[in-house]
Amino acid sequence: MKKTFRIDGMTCSACSAAVEKATGKLEGVAKSEVNLATGKMTIEYDENLLDQETIFGAVMKAGYRAYEDKDTRKVVIPVEGMT
Image (tube, rainbow, N blue to C red):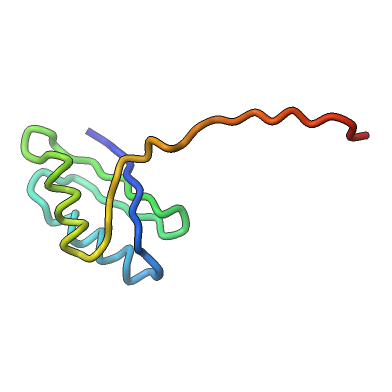
């Protein structure tokens, strides 16, 4: 399974590396990548060996907060009068 989560609290590349290291060593994780600029982690894992709660716990133990990115919405704003 491949999922993307938001990570709060990261301020530098050492932060994103700490999250990658913490999640990357969990049993069942094939790949963990953290993008500091977007504040997101993409993780590939075997859902039979690992659950989301355990991933969130590993991120929390590293000093950060992970959560599902359900707040993303598409917004269309009509703009008139431009020439």
